[in-house]
Length: 322
Image (cartoon, rainbow, N blue to C red; front, top):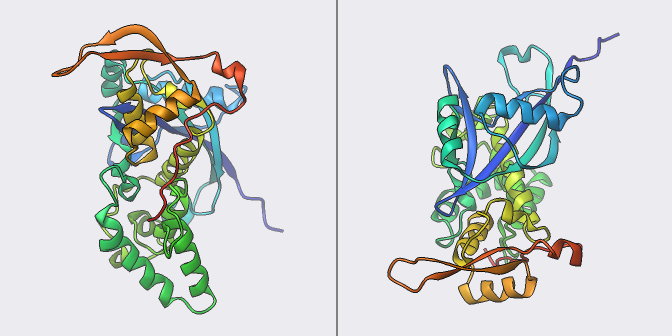
């Protein structure tokens, strides 16, 4: 009788902040490993009563950062997700979390001392950033390679791959859904177009594309993709966007933060009408000096909205086509 596999429970955190209207992801590194990683560590039930308590302790120990808003994402347990030579050692099942925070100069100094650093989230998922229009990477590299991958499969697998491409990337009059971040990354992984497929021994190196974002350790880029998908969905029905904002902010700052997460430009007047209709903010009565223009009014999150309706969010409409 085969002995049961040894299982280790790990905890990973995709920690997000906004800087200069750019989404930042907190990453850590280890000596001798050039790949970025999300903060992670084992769950020790002898030390911590809950996984969340254990994650908070791990993150603070690794990065000197105290987490605020946090929510569980998903459990990642595929065999080989922590590929090692010979695949020896316990099988690691990881529970992923999404955490939101605000940048702070004092805390950032501590982060640097810990070896942690903030990186542009879209550096790992460049095809997800549509703020300057449709990324040239899609039509110049990604879609041609994925079409070849789909056509090379035997039937009916080929038809299934083409169908997944349509849904994930918004092809043939299908709308491009910004929330399908994970589906897009998984297609790129299966097709061998990202470096992680090589790391895991799934595909030969010649199939990868160096331009397809910065690779991460193990399956941490898949966890980051899952976190981006969750956050893009969440801002539409929960006021979590304000976890990334200063206590007082301009509407321009709020729009820039929403655009940074959604990965696309939003028309200014449409956004102002959306904010007014959602009743999520209220004026503080103060203004912020603007360079070369009129002072901008400052707003704050109107917390009373949490008592008024069950799903207060900024329901930014999706793209009509890819």
